[in-house]
Image 1: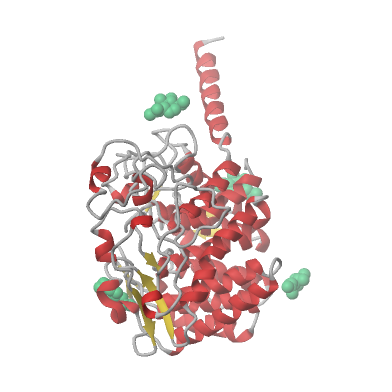
Image 2: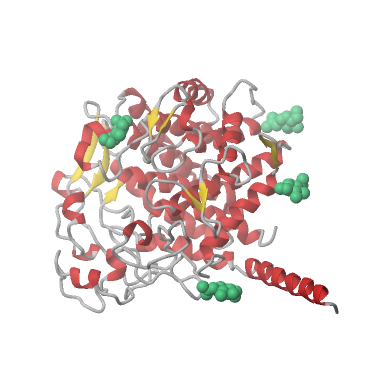
Length: 502
Ligand SMILES: *[C@@H]1O[C@H](CO)[C@@H](O)[C@H](O)[C@H]1NC(C)=O
Ligand SMILES: *[C@@H]1O[C@H](CO)[C@@H](O)[C@H](O)[C@H]1NC(C)=O
Ligand SMILES: *[C@@H]1O[C@H](CO)[C@@H](O)[C@H](O)[C@H]1NC(C)=O
Ligand SMILES: *[C@@H]1O[C@H](CO)[C@@H](O)[C@H](O)[C@H]1NC(C)=O
């Protein structure tokens, strides 16, 4: 062999190694773990089937001080507050993961349903008094100033609600979306439960729509700066109606979506990154802004019902969204690290990676069904290109990155050891049954040692823009897991579990 041939052979082998490494991800294992994570976030009385056993019962009196049962639901991240706005978004995304990709989940589909029901049982409680919707439980300032196990919590578990006179259309609209999406998931399994969810979803949607306003104003400092609704509540109303339309096929919800989507694009919103958007903020999707999700979801619904109207903004806007994400697009508006991870301003980055990748994957199915291509200027993108982009992001998360590091706890050889999470970082009740008080946790927070309890499946905020990761508990922007990072990942992993190579 000449030197050139040998070099070519070497390059070929290296390419093959890269391909084999990519193909070697165990998406099924990652899927099981991504769902297991939600057991670690559970609040309330844990069932005998609980698999993350270092977690115990917690917050068993939530709501009792005002005579309401608000026990259950999820802690949103590494703290012990139940923030219903992001909790509802995570639930909607889990339900969307199942409606779209549940058939690929195998035995994990049942686990995914349990994860959804843990939230919907709680949302039924949080919406059980007509005219009120509970928006959070737990004083966030007191909670955030302590480093305590949820089982030890002794900070005020104050419940905060929105009402007719103090409205919160974003938190109510998102809860309506979650209940409606979950009603679709439960319909084939448990018709009675599904009907209950749907009935409540309609009620809460009416409440959100009739008594309009932002919980920013009604609840003020109790929700801002934690889960401030930067992008307005109008998107949650359209999103809630879109899920109700999907759940009921009723024309009134369709009309609501079509009519109000027009207004949506006229509203100027200031987003979490401080930038202002007009034209409906079509590039945004997350617990705050629902715009890109509405366009992808509704494009698909209109195609399925054969009612696509060329004047509707949904498909053009979904196309525009894709053109902001594809690296080769002339209208690219997200960033990529040298190692290929998608970045967007605004907090825990991995939430953007998973939610936007989820939309790319769902829209790829739409493109496939509609036999459609996307034109970003001169660049043409097809369905497989969108799948390939989504896969590259999932693979990065699982370890195909410059550090060879998985960002999912308990998956792969190398993963975050010091996640910003109270329960994971403090010794479990089994090890130290004695109460550890508010300040008693500081020593564990400041320790350099790995967390004693593995929160298996937790995906953290992720590396910085240079692909490095400090693995530091104090660095919560990068080391904190959240339910809304994992929820869309559940759907992505289900799809790749059954489509392990492209
Ligand atoms: C919510 O509060 C934030 C921060 O104060 C503000 O930027 C945003 O415009 C508010 N949104 C609404 C809908 O009031
Ligand atoms: C939509 O239209 C196509 C072609 O006209 C037809 O084959 C399909 O059955 C229709 N689907 C629905 C849900 O009506
Ligand atoms: C989709 O586009 C890619 C380029 O991004 C191209 O390589 C591939 O052949 C296309 N697939 C189909 C089915 O057209
Ligand atoms: C990651 O893995 C590749 C291939 O095995 C290796 O060449 C590289 O040195 C590794 N990088 C790190 C930071 O471990």
